[in-house]
Image (cartoon, rainbow, N blue to C red):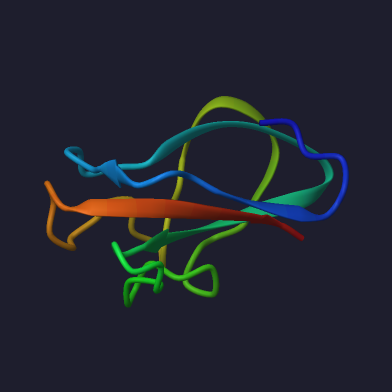
Length: 87
């Protein structure tokens, strides 16, 4: 994703099997924060945009971190969405 203006993107529901979220992002002059949402669209505690360490720059494989942790500890194999906001 290349972000040049403020905005947001929410993925369709996905089944998350891994333990890390890796993004390809280019954010010139801004940053992007990611939240993991449950199947109802509500942010999962510990994985909100406020918990996310905003990403700045250009990377093909950036590991998203929440509160300094890159590992997702919430239940896997459950439907969820990712919500991206440029700030």
